[in-house]
Amino acid sequence: MASVAMRQPAEGSDIENAGFAAPFVFSGAGGTLVGHGAGCSLAPTAAGSLAAAVEVFWKEQRHATLLVGALPFDRTAAAHLYAPESVSAAAPIGKVRSLPRAAGGWTSIAEPPAATYADSVARALALLNDEAAALRKVVLARSLLVTAPHAIDLDAVLTRLAQDSTITTYAVPLPAAASGAPRTLVGASPELLVDKRGGTVRSAPLAGSARRHADAAADRASADGLLHSEKDLREHAFVVEAILDTLTPYCRALSAPEGPSLVSTASMWHLGTAIDGELKDPAVSVVELAAALHPTPAVCGLPRATAREAIATLEDFDRGFYAGAVGWADRAGDGRWMVAIRCAEFSGATARLYAGAGIVPGSDPESEVAETSAKFAALLAALGIDEAGRTQEPR
Ligand SMILES: C=C(O[C@H]1C=CC=C(C(=O)O)[C@@H]1O)C(=O)O
Image (cartoon, rainbow, N blue to C red; front, side, top):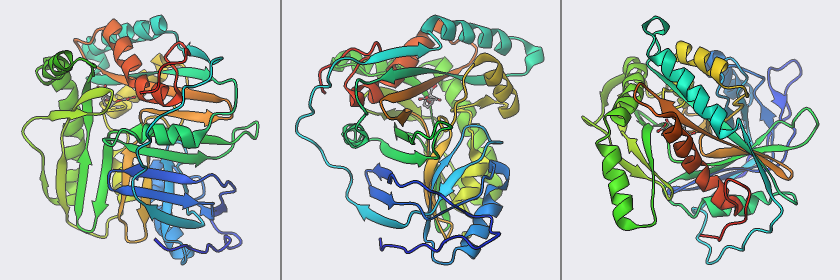
């Protein structure tokens, strides 16, 4: 991809200078997209008005070719989208022969502690069993705040995450914190929210999880158990149903297989369904589709508004961009957006990791604690520590 020179925003424009310089990275099996520097950014816009704001952006910024960034979990909070000063395309991030062992001296604090999270799951189950609450599924998350004895090397984290070729590794420079400290969202997502090229659209939701095992027989048993788990199949079906409902008005043809298949990352098994459609209007923008789909019941729940309320009551932290979406869009309306999971927000020597789990009737609080621990594994391995902050052997 060629370098793009960006104009400064016109006076009185809705578009602002992004004012940060760390690269945007989006790397999967198909290749690596890197956005260098920051030209203009979209004025703070919530999901409901995003498609219209992006249309205005393309009209005003005639030299911009690509918008990159992240949507927050909260649909009413501002999306973070900007045009890099230049973009380059490269091969997928390569394999490295050996990974150095992390130095000691890390700390890790579970926020909330595992027991508090288990208690929230139990409270969610009470809501799910209360007909008056009309809640069918809710995704509850917890976080780990880890602190290194030195500034964390994000290049090394990205390289380690990218050793798993089944996922999309990403880094999104975020607006600085109130303290002025730079922040970057870094993660490794296995879940495609939406990919749109010309007249075709694809979404590949995941829901239903089991951890992987080093022992081949135990690993197979874990996968088989997941594929036949009535609770996980139910949890998964809600997501497929919601995505089909959202995409139907946009499509002249839309299809999904009868049931889910197993999808694996280096650390997790998931139930996954590939949904493919042909758009009625090939000019519809991927941003419009992403904003319509987000947040799916894979990260929020069903019905969406009821689940959102339950999350606000049961989680006592702001998800920020975790459980949002990360990706890119071009001026033709094409692009690709992954669900922003298996990620952490990095700032200097600290990283806040997030992991969530879908709760439906039949979920068990202790199993959901274990599932969220398993979901931290990819990021923790990339940092070279375990959940307690102890140095672990490089994989
Ligand atoms: C919300 C997360 O995962 C979602 C994606 C796959 C499987 C999930 C599950 O089984 O609960 C979640 O819906 C997360 O990793 O933080």
